[in-house]
Image (cartoon, rainbow, N blue to C red; front, side):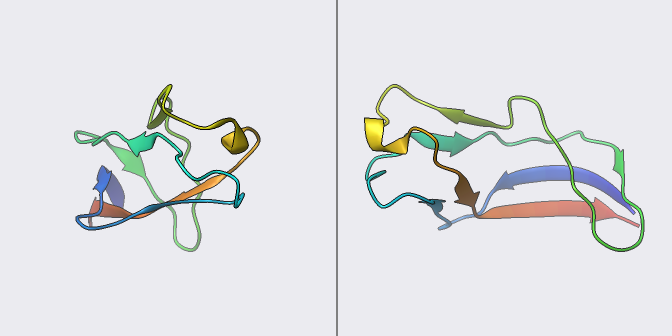
Length: 76
């Protein structure tokens, strides 16, 4: 399989790992025109500049990790 696109999920959310991170300012870029080969089983994919954090983020977000709802597109 080949991963060909990642986009923010319509109606999805960004969930920080820290409760003090009330305004994360985190967003996900729409990443189309990818061509990443996936092997059978679990895969970890690292994407440079795939997510960004704006200056709207509160200081409680320092050191947080974020779960971001996404839609992926793959071709067989």
